[in-house]
Length: 136
Image (spheres, rainbow, N blue to C red):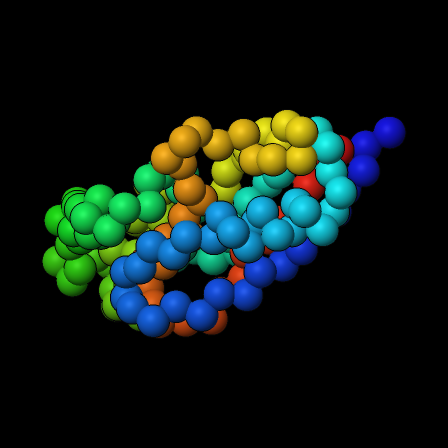
């Protein structure tokens, strides 16, 4: 039998492009669920956001942010910009992805030593929703 537990995280972002560490909030959810082994799906409901796993180190986060801005610059004639001027955000979100899955072993996320779960805002500031779904 598969058990499922679901939680929604509400995130308020403050910048147009921002990386927010949500690892502790996810660890709290796992602790509350009493899960021993299984896996977690982390999913963002928005077409201008992403979810990644990487190191939460300030200079690296700035490097990622700067690289994203250089990779897909704002306002260079995208057709979607005629609607709401955020085509760059949608394009970046397709490159990053909107979900990750992580094994849970012995009630802990199976992350590496330096790995954190990061929510990536690409069109802020906004109020955002992340869905956490545990399977055990």
